[in-house]
Image (cartoon, rainbow, N blue to C red; front, side, top):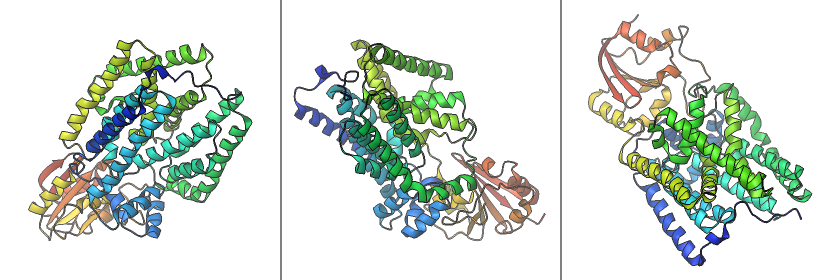
Length: 503
C-alpha cells in the first residue's frame, strides 16, 4: 500500500488522556495570543508601507487594482483590507486585521501540529508561536505578510490531505491562488509542493492518483494566475528593489535565527549566532538521518514539512545572489514548519535536552517580547508630525525624499501644508518612480521649483541614499540656503533651511 503509517513524527504516548483538557489548554493559549497581539497595537507610529496600505484600501476596488499595478504587489490584501476598514483610516483598525489573522494562524498551528506530531508537541509548537516576537510584530503591522502566512498554512493543510487520498482539490486550489494573489513569494510554496509530489512519486510513496490530482491543482493555480502574470513581469521591470541589500552569509543565518528565536537573538555576537545556526542544522540533519534515512521510514508528511521549512528559504537565497529579493519579513510563513521541526528534533533527544531546547526559545522570545512591547522601535513619524505642528509655519516649504513620506506624515500633521517630494510626480494610484534616482540631470529642475523658493524649507529624508545616493539635494541646499537646525526621528532626518536664493 502507498499509504504509510506515520512513524517518524508520532509519539502517541505523549497524547493527552483527555482531549477536553487539550482543547482547554489550546483555548487558554489562544486567549494569550489575542492579548499579546492586541497589547500595544497602537504604540508604534504608522510607517510608509502601512500608510500606503491604508490609503490605497480607502479607494474603490478598481482603483486599488490600478494602484497595485503601479506598485510591486498583487492586490488581494488591499481588497480585503478595504472591506475590513469600510472607509476608515484608523491605524489600529488596519493593524487589527493582521492581529485577527495572527490569532487564527496560532489556531492553525495547534491543529496542524496535532495532526503530524502529538498532543504535547502540538501544545509546544503553538505556545512558541503564541509568544514569538517575530510573529507578534507582523500581527501588529498593516501589511500582507500575516495574510500570506495564513493562506500558505491553509494551502499546505489541503495539500497534505490530498496526499492522504482525500478529495481537497477545490479547497487547495482556492487557498493557493489566494496566497499567490497576496504575495509573489507564494510561488515558492507552489514550487515546493511540486518538488514534494515529484520526489514522493519517484519513490512510490504516493499513488499515481494523488500525484495527478496534486499536479492538476498546481496547474489550475498557474492558469488562474496567468492573467496577472504580465503585470507581475511589468512590476519586476519597472520597480527595481534598490532598498534590498545583496544577500550576505550573516543575513542568511540571522534570518533563520530571527524566525526561530526572535530578533532579540541578534543581540548576541555574530560568531555565537553562526555557531548556533550550525548546531541547529546539524541536529536536524542528524535526526533526519537517524530516524528517517537509516531506519528507512517513509513518512510523506515529514518529507513535505522538511521541504516546506527549507526549500523556499534556499530558493529565495539562490535568486538573491544575482537579484536581491531576500527580506526576513517575507519568510513569516516559514515560522510554523521551522518551529515544528525544532520541536520534533527536541522530542528525539533526552528529556533534559528537550526541555533545554524549548527553554532557550522561550527565554529569548520572552526577553525580546518585553523589550519589543515596551519601547518604540519603528521610525517616529508621529514625533516628526508633532514637531512640524509646533515649529513649521504655513508659508514654509516642506520637501520629502522620498515623496511617499507624505503618507505617514498625513496621519499626524494638523496644519494644511503643501508637501512636495521626489519623485515629483508620485501618486499612490499611478506610482511615479521607475528607478530613476536624483542625478545631475534632474537636480536643477528639483531644486529651483517649489518648495525651494520659500523663505524657509523643511527637508525630510528617509533613507535618502536609495533615491539620492550622491546627496545632491542636500549639497544644493547647503549652497543656496542657510541650515538652521537638524532633528532626528529614528531613521528620519528633518533639516530646516532658511534664506534660500537661486543658484
